[in-house]
Image (cartoon, rainbow, N blue to C red; front, top):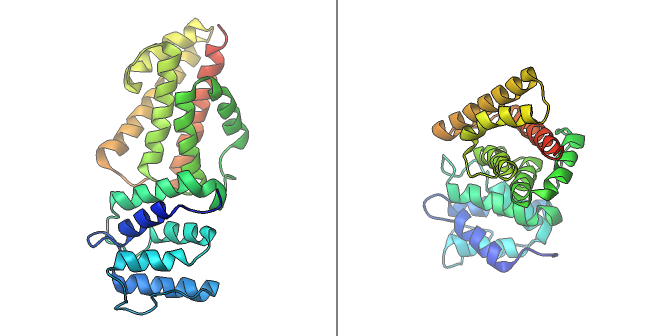
Length: 246
């Protein structure tokens, strides 16, 4: 793929130019004039009011004259524009996530230097035997690498761990209800009583931390996300290694 489909550009323009939660017409003109100046591009709608049926159409027309990598950059930056009504609408957050999930590998600048990369790579290799958990874990990794530090990244990490435990234990229990089984599982694989108790306690605290964010819709802190990501990865690594011990 070397371009962003028109259907996606149209949908992005509809969301970012929405009357209720999108940018105003004057802000759309201002921001695109800035991009046009920075990248030496002629845009069709450089003054407001513009000669277009509505601001969504004007946004789309302006967006189309940029190269795909700049379209990616513009949409991503508009999703966090300071002039958006606060709190930012869920549709805009979802747009940013879809943009990154679909096109970051082609047009994004993926940076993953902060995570413990040997640990992450090891977990990715282990998860190939657990595809449902793997898919969610990789989604979380894409969000982290693209600085999408939002609560649904934590939701993805929690779900990936929950799905792994369901496959390992052969049940459909929620993460909270797996905690007692974790201790028994570790003991059955030869783990010491102290390690078993510690592991179970850490997972218990992990679920309580996650539930606090779900219930209160709190904003997440970048440093905490990094810690939770590596903790989740460590849990998964050791659970899979013990699972394969037979």
